[in-house]
Structure formats: structure tokens, C-alpha cells
Image (tube, rainbow, N blue to C red; front, top):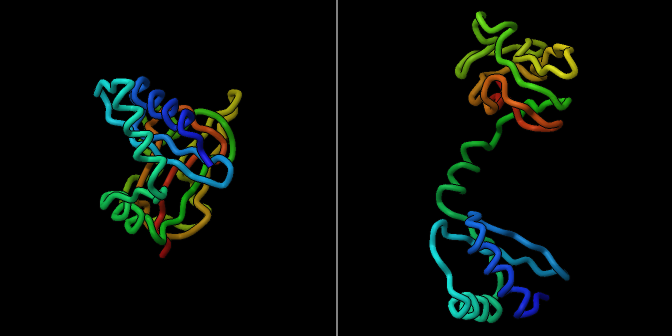
Length: 154
């Protein structure tokens, strides 16, 4: 369970940093604080908001946009980066990308390259289907497990 002063501090933190939202789990309780960018929150209003939050049950906040996005992503297969490195859509700067949104791909087809320590690692698709999203920008650093492509399986 959250203490009143802990909630006040979290609200002040969200307000002062301008983050969009903060979710915290503590002692079996969950708390979500949605921030509003560029709004000044006084200590009195933060205390009032914390009091209101402390006196009502915490419920998950799901917007219509989030629900629509989740429905659109249902059934997609995500191709993720197996390593940390730099994402490249084409074999060289002058070449066409390996794949574009809307392309039909087969299992084992090269989708991109992730460069790690001067080694060019070809990333292959592990399902047949259609590419519906390319997430990172070309030459963007990517992390292990980061989503690179969304493929709608055939």
C-alpha cells in the first residue's frame, strides 16, 4: 500500500519532469499517474490530487487509442534484434532496402542488417507473411530484444 506522502512525492516528480505517465508497483498495489506536459502543479494541488488518488481504488487506464492499437497489433509476429548494434535497412547506403512495408516475405528471407563491432549480421524473417511495420529508423542503434519488424503471418 502506498503512503500518502509517497503519492504526493510521485505526483510532484511527474509534474516537475513532464513525463507522460508513471506506473509503480509497491507492496502489492499499483499506482499510475498520468502527467500533463507543460502544466505547472502547485504543492497544494499535488496534495489534493494525491488525497483523491489515495481514497479511490487504482484501475488500469486504457484509452480508446491504446485499445485500437492493441487490436491492430493482435496476430502480428514481431521480429526482434538478437544483438545490440546499429540497424540498417539495406546492404549499403546506395542500395534499396531489403524489405518495405507491404512486401510479402518468406521464412529465412533477409530483412535487415544489425552491425555489431564491425560485423554485419543479417537478420532473417522467421515466419512467412507481409511486413506491416518497420520500427527503427535506418542507422539507428538497437538493443537486444528490441522490435524491428511487424509481420502479419500468412
